[in-house]
Image (cartoon, rainbow, N blue to C red):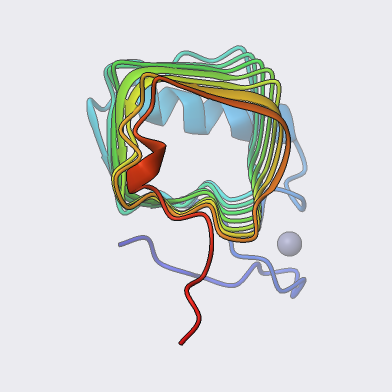
Length: 196
Ligand SMILES: [Zn+2]
């Protein structure tokens, strides 16, 4: 699992792997992003990377395997994730816009408080994923296994779930505006908290 080393500036954020300060306190953020991108490009398997807050534009993360990594507060614009494997990774409060996720395999991944706009997930495993309080708009979930994933308190807008397995997927307290479920086994999903 990634190590949390406090930023040397004392800001309370965690330092990026291989650096003593967080992304915000990098003197040259573009160079820091390149360093992280090159690290990922050079390793088919990436373990224990802390890339909190790093901003990625137009990067291709395809065919990579990530274990125990942290992309908390990271920004992904127009990035591609094709045949990517994620295990025990933290993307809380990350922001995704115009990203494509294809034939990927995500398990035990947290997107709590994350924001997705104009993204597409297709033909992927997204099981035991946590979208607690996530804001998701104009995004498609197409042919996915969402078994036991949680969208509790999420804000879903103009978003479609098409041909997904939503067995034990929890949508309790999720706000829904123009959300479609087609043909998806919604009878097996959880939409309300049962009174105890
Ligand atoms: Zn800092």
